[in-house]
Image 1: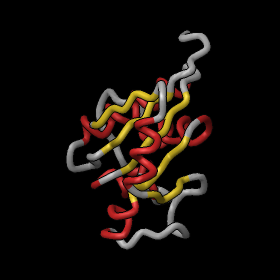
Image 2: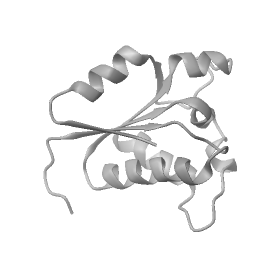
Image 3: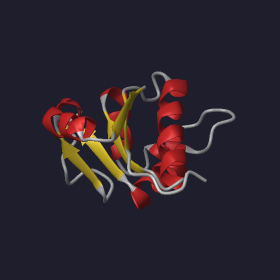
Length: 124
């Protein structure tokens, strides 16, 4: 669809069940890009941090939206998923708690990814 892409897409999801449409948009854009062969890094911050935990994405439902668990699976399979260090700590989420493949990292890593040559960052 998009051919060979040298760019990276860094998507920061700042909303969870508290703003379901914004949350679903972030996951949908990230998964669509990942499925098209784009190098994707999805960052879970704020309330979206809860989706780093097993079973949480399965509990999310939004009419006319792809299931969040399926979108997350696509991203985990082909890209990177990161939970914000501070956001995870505020929710008592540790590395042993998250879905296999999800890492916990902080702002320095986000900035590094976003500032990499050819990167495009989107915040939802």
